[in-house]
Image (tube, rainbow, N blue to C red; front, side, top):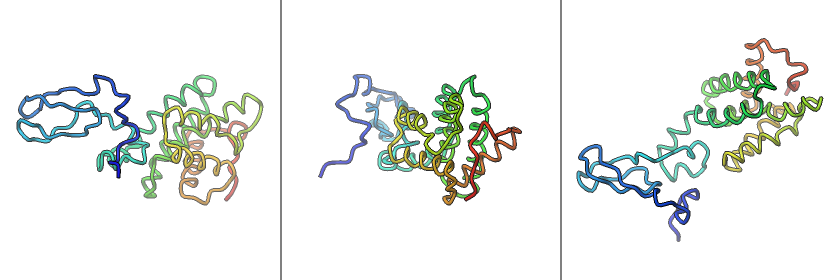
Length: 218
């Protein structure tokens, strides 16, 4: 049986700088780190030292994160700001100046979704992503003189694929968006998305009849 290894840390593709030395913060002795080391015991003073260059960014998405970095993954995944920051950049690029109203609604909805998800005891990551991405395809359809429909998730999927989001998580987010557009609000995440969007529209005083897809009753 092979030893489990993070699929994103194949050492065949490492660069020389991925193995480096750093001084121990306790005694000053040098410790050799490999880039996938989370922490090591200093060979000089025997204190545990965290890898100063370790980047747990993948923990926001990777389903194997708990195997790779243990409880650190759970702590990291509980911070929806990680998700929002990665997606906001792409959403701003796509919507930008041409669709400021769509952008404002998406960003405000993401804020409400985080709050509601925590109150309901739900995972905020997927609903925040759905809020940020649900208008991406609507912008293109608006330019074509159409309203967004349940098929409007192509660009959203492309963004997530470009960010390296795991297929199963990408599918989960796409399902939430498509269920919202189809009026299938039976799931907790779909209900949170719908409520967050409604609150965002209300907070911004948005007139949504032409700009946004009509939400059907469940």
